[in-house]
Image (cartoon, rainbow, N blue to C red):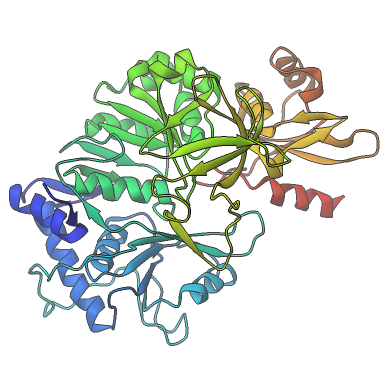
Length: 484
């Protein structure tokens, strides 16, 4: 079948079997027919407010069916949808909105963004707006996301892809007419893209309003979930429920559990491979700019332990040294990517400039290496690398070892100034309550070289990582430098 616009693809599935469930979130479920009708009516309501092809529509809603309806409604008019966190304070939110100058903001009360039209959370479209199909308009581009990056200055990353899908050819290893679970925040690219791609493949998409480890396991069992994208933090929290809780739920429907967002620690990957089987535990590596992508199954991973896979979909990966030279297999350097369409084809920035090399290769800022067979391994972010006493310490490696300790919920490792070492390795440990530091040091001594074991530890009770599993080590470092 030829590729269809988002609205047309959803209509195709509704015409095939309109009574099948399309979306569920908490206690609410809607069928394909109801979903399409609501999106059509919303599109006309947006159109009456002035939204047209090429405009930006900002969606500031919590994870919900309402968020996905608003996003689809915008794309049906050819607009670019940009989800943002509904919890952003105005000081962070308003500069982002100013960058794109949207035609409409969904999820904010009237007057909250000057003269820009807004629709509040819980908006109900007037019934005079027809729910009949609209004339087909292709959104190109159709999606954008925002990032503060390491600088703290907002930028918008516009995905250059057209909103076109073949309903009979699922993307990203999804399957036709199955159930997919979305536990992550929809204002992030991977959960949002997975949800939309799953809908295009006729899936029943189950959205979690917020991640909870036991609820996630229960939903996999309840809905016979086929596919779920997770970050390592989610995997860790589900695994720590223990065999008694995990054993109460049937996970046999799960064809693919795919890890993303950060390199999955080897010990955690092994735990899930043992639980589900290697064919069902996958991982991919990319960045918001979609410069390229690697993918690896658990079966491959067992032969290339620690890898995030080889390039897929025509993308390419190379490793470059500090002097700009390409490095051979096994040497750590900056990871550079090239999309299948060539330089600059996957995205464009608003509010920032790309750091593309003259030959077109571009980096997401990560360090890593390739093995002789072309499998990629992630070391860490270059900005997070700690040089302590002349030794390179990669925080992700140390955090993976700390997080294995049964009393630890999560950790973040940073470098703090040290008169002797240049920088000392400092660990911030999230735990229910402080425990014996010497016990933790003994635990790490069997897992890390002495130079990598933190010289100092700090126990905290508040969450270190955000709901998408990411940690801003630079912000944690700056906070401790101010205190010091």
